[in-house]
Length: 161
Image (cartoon, rainbow, N blue to C red; front, side, top):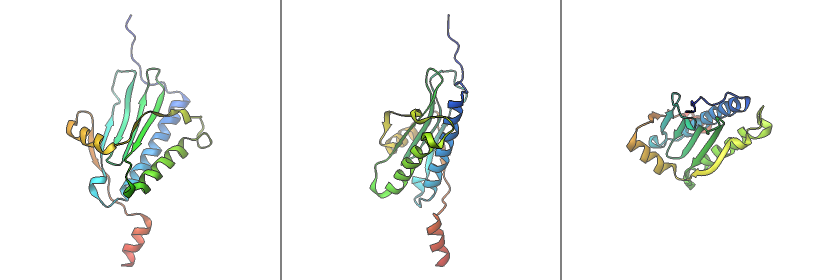
């Protein structure tokens, strides 16, 4: 008998993982918005809401500096995968992203213990190359440009000038 695929289980754990994932995504976009270089604010986004597969990508964000993915495993349990470009010039972005990711998923910050939702069985250590590959393929992703928003310190300097 063929097993019928279903959507990820909407358990309290999964709801918390999904909520936290979108908080992390919002913070990642806010960090990237402070970059003046437009090409570093480009992103590719994949949303797979209609897949009939049990193991699937639900939301994927790929940028030349940061990578973030919400996925469902074969049992319907949600997990988060991430990555960043090891680049000294933008370490302030990648370090802030990583610190926020772990701070947002720590036991003390959530109603459910979702610390084990962070998966590092494969780590995207070069999102720049992945971004270039996905941009060429463009099968499942859509292109987005994050609007530039200078950091608060930079805005004050611009007003004073």
